[in-house]
Image 1: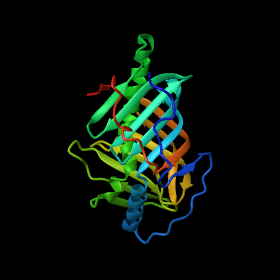
Image 2: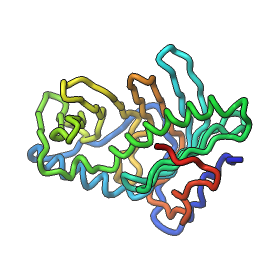
Image 3: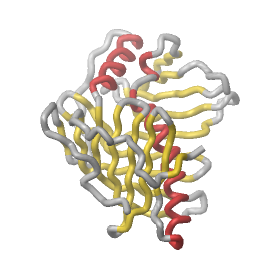
Length: 247
């Protein structure tokens, strides 16, 4: 059985910054010279976040409106390692692990609960994959299209082999990403993720609320506790023994 927190052993031996995320923002303005300077600042900020450990809630909503709210524990490192555990009233719902070798899902052995848990876990898998956007890889590219709007910098990657592009809307005054959008070759949004409720953790602005929307429904993550750059357990991103590797 998957147990609720503590999610992973976090040793307070290195820089450990924490915040309790509330509902208001108080972000400092950032001085930058030109759009390329702004993108460099965004890249440096992303690189400053080596690991994330957080607790909160996740709400999964189907296109028809049916929703479920779960307690959440999450850990992330870089752009290719994410672990998400979810439970409700002490009952494990799913344990999702993503690392460079793939994605694994562990659901309860209880057959009557497994189908719903699997559905929730597969939905969370898409979120875990899109959380990779927060690793800052987009801002390290040298071939970006940058459009200056009155209050937003619109940063867009060139299309990949499937014609998909990533667009990020960045608030000009504070230089924090507010929305990531995945666009297809016809310029239609296939996925969108809004970031809000930023907090300054040390000198790093960190979003505590994520709303992801796609044809499969909506996912809302609200974090109440965040720790940055703590030392993670060696097996933080090792799938549980019974976990199933997803295609």
